[in-house]
Image 1 (cartoon, helix red, strand yellow):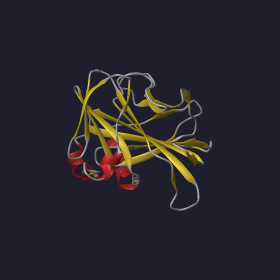
Image 2 (tube, helix red, strand yellow; image 1 turned 180 degrees about the horizontal axis):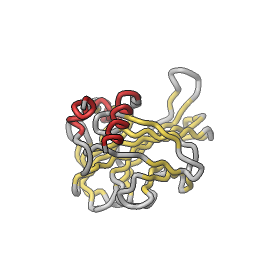
Image 3 (cartoon, helix red, strand yellow; image 1 turned 90 degrees about the vertical axis):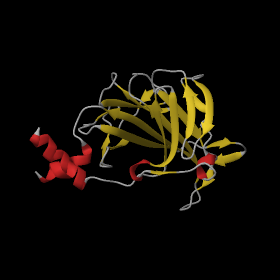
Length: 225
């Protein structure tokens, strides 16, 4: 245990990255909450401002949403589903700030790892319920060599690549909430709403919680021992 804790402490000091804006979903009983912002810095867009750009109208499994309200920093959806819930949020194509490329972004968020089934076009699917091994799935097929980042409760992060079968495995030593993110760029051209785009960026996040492990609030004290 001491060796594991030491390795975790070293990783938490040496491996960190800034998270791009993302959509993520959290589930509490029959309540599903949709957030947009930066999970790693606890920065959330607000209703009346940029959160209004997020509609959260496409839910998976289909038909699980019963009522939607906009709260201060999230969209609250009442869902009649005991398992995992996913949200797909397509954004209108827009020109890149750094080039002439017109990009279509599709944000996706999944709450939970209780079901070993695909919910989203780009998905992280546990190989079995509550597993720390996931398969990166793109349009129903495993996606090899995909870059996946996991953030832990102390906002520590690590990035790994899926293997040839699309699988990644993470260690989750802390109690608390985790967020994994995978992004994929599809260079297929297309058209949406009369606007031609050069590529699509799929940004998918998976949120889940761990009930047993190191109390991360005391991580610095543990590292000092």
